Amino acid sequence: MMTNRRSALPRLLILLLTLVFAPLLAGCPGAAPDGGKVRVATTTGMIADIVRNVGGDRVDVTALMGPGTDPHYYKATAGD
Image (cartoon, rainbow, N blue to C red; front, side, top):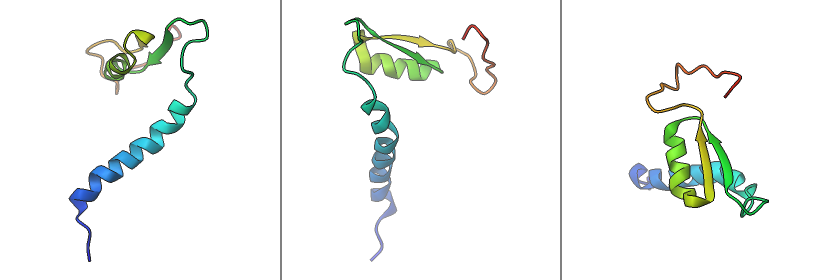
């Protein structure tokens, strides 16, 4: 009996996301050591938005690439 690929796709996606993000989250402390906000640096603005939405007022987010920057052509500088 063949399984339906459409019904297996969401489960596979959840599994892959869990395998990718679980190790990252396991290393995150519950709060900043000094009791302040957790400082997070992201590459793109889209990732920064996700972190802000998830972390709320507990995080201080800095995005390396500003709005409208194409990540495919971005060249990092020493200041980044």
